[in-house]
Length: 258
Ligand SMILES: NC(=O)c1ccc[n+]([C@@H]2O[C@H](COP(=O)([O-])OP(=O)(O)OC[C@H]3O[C@@H](n4cnc5c(N)ncnc54)[C@H](OP(=O)(O)O)[C@@H]3O)[C@@H](O)[C@H]2O)c1
Image 1 (tube, protein in one colour):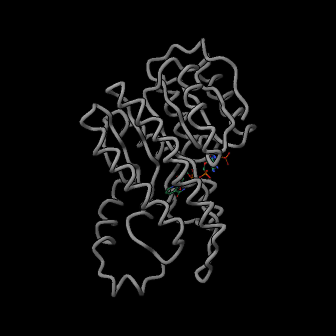
Image 2 (cartoon, helix red, strand yellow; image 1 turned 180 degrees about the vertical axis):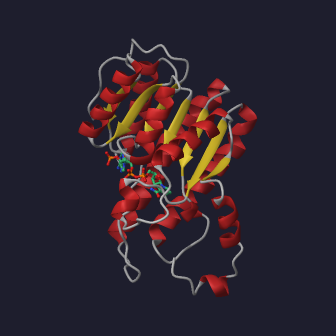
């Protein structure tokens, strides 16, 4: 773990931790939140990508808005001490966003435990480790916001990538449990369910059509955070598409190819 320079020059109003910020949705959200005046602690494994993003954000803001912390979310035992370090560096934490995760390509006839484990480790167990810290802090504070970048893939068990869908379904249920615990304590828990977003992950999985721009995705997440929404599909019309998918009878769903 590489720790970053001190954050004392930070003075903006809101302070957020973004886990999984080196590319894609996390990086775009970092740019969006910095633009809205947030001070940010950005975490991921690729130090070079994180440092470049911090330089870009800080140059655009004209001060130190973002600081990088190199971290692998599967180093679960390091997370409690790192969370306390971030709290000390930022002075306070208002929001914690969990956007980390891998999605290796899984073929239609493949059953590969290593790939499934990598997805559950990064998409679900890392989220439990990070958001449990956030939940305990925000419960004590009586305020704060937890944001999970889940997926429409958690809404129904589909044929394409069973391990990914299972990790996302677990994440969605965990976020709902946190919401049911914490809303009464003044804490907002926001579940984001993107469809297909134009990022490294979707391109690597061979998706090329119908991709939603990552900048618009980040803007929609920031708006949902501002309005303290609870469950948001991106783009919004996916809510209706997924309503149809959720209610498709199993005897039809078993024959589908997605
Ligand atoms: N793209 C889509 O269509 C789509 C749709 C629905 C949901 N999502 C979800 O959105 C989230 C972000 O994905 P994305 O599309 O933005 O893909 P991405 O560009 O590949 O971003 C994934 C992020 O997670 C970080 N990460 C992965 N494993 C990590 C680990 N072990 N420790 C720390 N950080 C880790 C990556 O950073 P490092 O590699 O530097 O560690 C990167 O910053 C994921 O949870 C994904 O499942 C994406």
